[in-house]
Amino acid sequence: MTSAAAPDSARHRFDPTILREYDVRGVVGETLFPADAYALGRAFGTVAKRRGAKAIAVGYDGRHSSPDLAAALSSGLSDCGLQVIDIGRGPTPMLYFAAYTLDVQGGVMITGSHNPPDYNGFKMVLEKASFFGPEIQALGAIAAAGDYESGGGTVEQRSIFDAYIDRVLADLGPKQTLRVAWDAGNGAMGEAMAAAVARLPGQHFLLNEVIDGTFPAHHPDPTVAENLVQLQETVTAQTCDLGIAFDGDGDRIGLVDARGRILWGDQILLFLARDILKRHPGATIIADVKCSEALFDGIAAAGGEPLMWKTGHSVIKAKMKEVDSPFAGELAAHFIFADHFYGYDDGLYAAIRVLEILNREAGEALADFRDSLPDFSTTPEIRIPCAEDRKKAVIGEIEARLAAEGADVNDIDGVRVREGGGWWLLRASNTQDVLVARCEAGNAADLEKLVARLRAELTASGLNLPEF
Image (cartoon, rainbow, N blue to C red; front, side):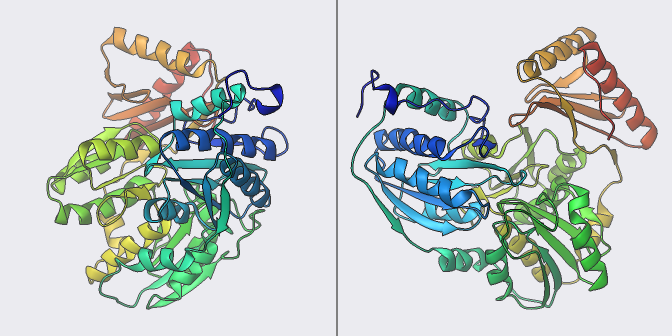
């Protein structure tokens, strides 16, 4: 191990913008370089080795910059004296699968997720738990000091693709003939999606399954309506029962019903939660603060204990372990299964669980479920530009004004305010220089009042609510 007085050549300083709350992420060639990947490998490898790790799995997505970053990262890990298991290209959940099932003590995925093609980054797992928050910030200090473990490690290539597909399909129950459209968005799930679908009964229509880091068809984010247009058109043209879309690294999904209607993340969460509660009556189901009241009410009506928690798949995974929850999710469409699974988010596995419910519940269509939901008026997620050093201050100012008014506020993550027959939310993003807002009411008139209230609070803190 080098000392804190390591030579300057051993020290490395990351661009301060790339060490995020849940991952490391930047613009390749501007804020993120192979040298950063090597230093990250040394720093993360140092932490892992000091916790007793001997081997780390590494995977990468389909972005053009990913192979070089993966090679640099692997060199950094091996120079710490670790064995590196290179599982190759694939979705983030395949790397999680490796980290949970191989004889390794952690894993690193090189991925830009759903960000534009010039972005890339790293998601980390250590000791079968997300590596996030202060742990990520500590990597910067280790690299700046050059305080690394050293040794002669190895890099071994090992395919787990077939084992991953086998496991994802293992929980598919009685099979019925469904017509399904699938859209990988040219993201990292493309090959795995095609391999899984080839083993399913029914009729299937594949879109954008060829992995291409330029994302030529559309941006790979299924939580944005414009990215689902091609899937909606295919569902309608092929009279499908449903459509399934993946994000860029395959840990999230979007759904479209037979009538071409989008099911948003909290609606999908309720569809899955109702089934899980049949096996786990009274269980705690976790959802983030951005989700609809209809979700929390629906969980309670299905016999579950709803728990509203902070946004972020890493913090939700940690909370699941704390309260022994079998299932959790976010409006952003991360769905995390401890029921029959490992406790991480996998878009392909979530899709199979949706199909399994439709297969088992003969006669129940996804459109029927969508029809059963209450018809609330809601805004989309609204992103308000805000300087990084102002985000928390603005939330604090608004929270103080609300407290002075005696408002009904949940402050678990920003402020979620109940008023006027609905609620509005404002929280600081953990990944961007923005505040995130959402409003929901029983009708359009009440929603307009909540939006006006949100706009007034932002104006009082010197910010403007953008058009949405």
